[in-house]
Length: 192
Image (cartoon, rainbow, N blue to C red; front, side, top):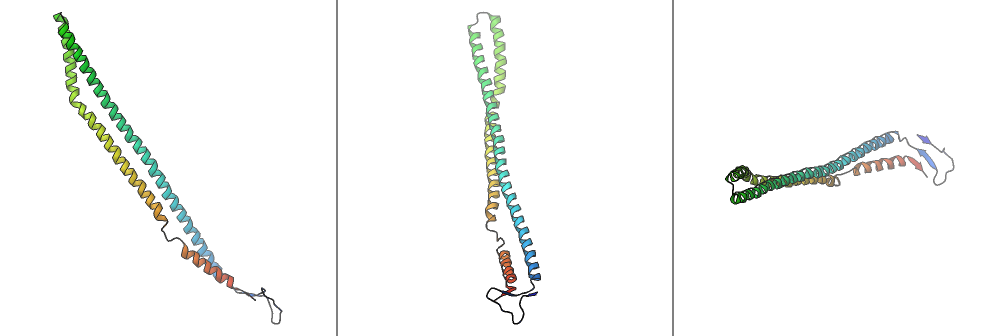
């Protein structure tokens, strides 16, 4: 494409004698470089998605476990409240029975007996339900454990995807091709 000397010109070491046409090589180089750039952008984007997925999995675990813990706390509170109501009713019933036994007036004893019977009815209705409250706590704890295992599995899957990324082939062959094309372009300048 360019001849820098004529026959009979004096030249010294390092002088460029001629330059060959590099148009087609330069076009190949530019296309390959653009393609490599797009591939790198795609890899960067994929990596950001994988990292975002891992962060979301960790946040979801925290949220799921907070909800599950809240369910456990609610079940414990409901159980404690039910046992407190039952124990209070038993205490009141025992007090009424003691008052009935100590009462000298039969009318007062009958009124106290009506109150005692009402408390006994409530206790008899509540007592069979007490184990259900214990079962609700066990179910809530089981749900917590299941949520934790599920969340840990999702986190591990996301982490595995990130870890597997380091084993992808990458652009080594493209880099080698770019280097080779650049060497060919450089070789098109002929020097002494």
